[in-house]
Amino acid sequence: MKAGFVQYHPEFGNVQANLDRVEELLAGKEADLFVLPELFSTGYRFKNMEEAHHYAELVPGGLTTGFLCSTAKKMNAYFIAGLVETENERIYNSSVIVGPEGFLGRYRKIHLFDTEKACFHTGREAPPVFDLRGAKVGVMICFDWRFPETARSLALKGAEIIAHPSNLVLPHCPQAMITRCLENRVFAITADRVGDENRVPNETLHFIGQSQVVDPDGNVLVRASETGEEVCVVEIELEKAREKILNPKNDIFKDRRPDLYF
Ligand code: ACM
Image (tube, rainbow, N blue to C red):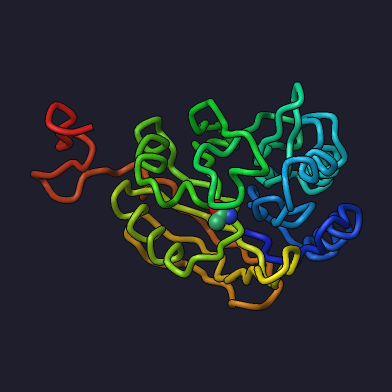
């Protein structure tokens, strides 16, 4: 399976320009699975929930999910991408999963970071795993990385690849995801954005780029720059993620002791 990420610089609030830019960056690229950043079509820093509501879209049915579905069909590829979602007056920091056959599902972020708590409602459902072209793909969003239970529970549910739409502001995530991959023997695709946002006085957010694909041995197969827009695709050998045995005596899942810890 070929999979990768789109790292780019969204313009806050200019959804159509952002969709157009992603379409431009994807021109001529091929993969089975592309992961896009968290909140890729709007940008990140909403001032409050009212503003997030203004930009929130129905999933499916909204402009961004429609764009992703038609792009997935045109490119014969799967997409996992972040957007602001509304349902029944609630607002979520969500990721959608779409393919050539259309809309497949969503995940609503369960670990909200910092000011996100004032802008979104917390997701109430466990991170999901999808069967995409023979690969089991789990979904988490950005700050979920800080809670190892997220990646662990996806891996225990069978995920071989973790798709990780992100807007990284803390420096530790690229290294931490190497550990998540080693702990669980999975691949992870972190799709980050680049650039700054100055939406609130005295609060400049700098996004660190460094989108990456990591394999189950903790090798970084590709890592993007800290500042540039890039689309990177690598070959994923799924068999590596299906093998949980480290040596003849250790199986990292069977050796767990859930009787002694949570
Ligand atoms: C983050 O969760 N966007 C830091």
